[in-house]
Image (cartoon, rainbow, N blue to C red; front, side, top):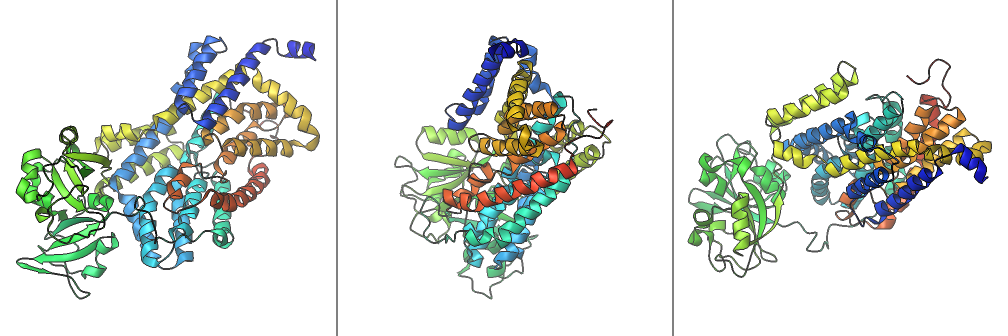
Length: 607
């Protein structure tokens, strides 16, 4: 046996090195003792140091067009998110389905899966978590009845297009290096639609019965929504004018109007109260929603309005939550008394005091230690206050401002890139890169924001694991593993071998990221297909889909986002996700040979 091995694989030590590094990588990915990007780079260094790969081969994965596609998608999705357009549309949709759980669940999953086909599923889930919780609260529906299906829909939506998830893009890049044609933008759409339809049907008719009913009441302080007190000025061009207070757009944004200041008159609104031009509304609302008011037409936060256009340089000022410390000069005094803005160049937009509702004008409230302020200032002044212990800055809020015009520009550039690339008029990397550049040049997103939205860790992981796939091939480790897999499983048939790789990928996605799991299994699966004389593309797409339908545990970022807001337990995901994963596996393994035959027709092989 040793002699046969030596003749077949003369560089057997390289196989040992590559497979040893693979085992170490899987363990490190699972325990997360070291960041995944560092693990990937360390593996590449080891491969170069042992001369399994040359320097050029080790870093060739970073020079592929897949990195350009992914980087461009990150910027485009960031631009769409920054404008707040999709968030606003999503909030209107879930409001439309108010008080009807089945209707809300169905419409939400359809919308989320559709958006996720073209955007990162984590981004889509993050957009909807807030609006869904707000609608659930108003309709007396537990968020736990809605959030988990929403997260699952966002994951399944990624199976519809090439850019639906980074895993699809990574697999396409890898098979290109193996000499196969890259995946088409809509090549997997037919089976993706089947996956989405199956998932939605299961969740609406079966999985819904197992969803927990964790009511919003009883949330801990850390989970509770802080109701900041602020003052909003109604400007002459506001849509609020003429609206009933209790049914106004502000109410739909989860604001509660406590008082109306109209000239010298101050009164508590009743169901008949109508908003007028020039009204100052004393409101409570979430910090994130107050941040959005800055970009809404026709209304303005009182301190910003007093400041006027001269000081409103949006790109230079950040919004942050800050705690009043015992050393602060604000303790026992009001903002009017301290002239805080003039003294420190910090604008206080709102105030929150735990266990004590505030109902006065914010500039006249005597502040206490522990009060939370929603402030707006540049980074230098925030840092200065932190150093002097005047305020403890807890967190900066992302400037989620609704800008309809820029939102339409960003979506227009995105759609144009998809159409030009999808129909082959221009290469997809070129169209997406061009669209990303246009979003920056048109002001939809700043270059600094674009850099922040790019997931550099994921790019390093995909680039490095693509090069690691080259190492597996160069060392003949894929041939070694494929030989033994074929020897052991060939009597059971090719579809059984394909199912084995499918299950292996699902299992690896539990400790590893989806893209990493797919890129680990892919080289061996492709070599196995070659030994069997089967269609390599069929095996590649099966591995890719397996990585996207693993819903057994809440390790996916989308699931993590809803875990705490839905007050879920680990077993909730297993109870609902395990049967769905099994059903989807059966569906995919049935339809894969229909769309991508296990054996190619002669003359229709590799390009």
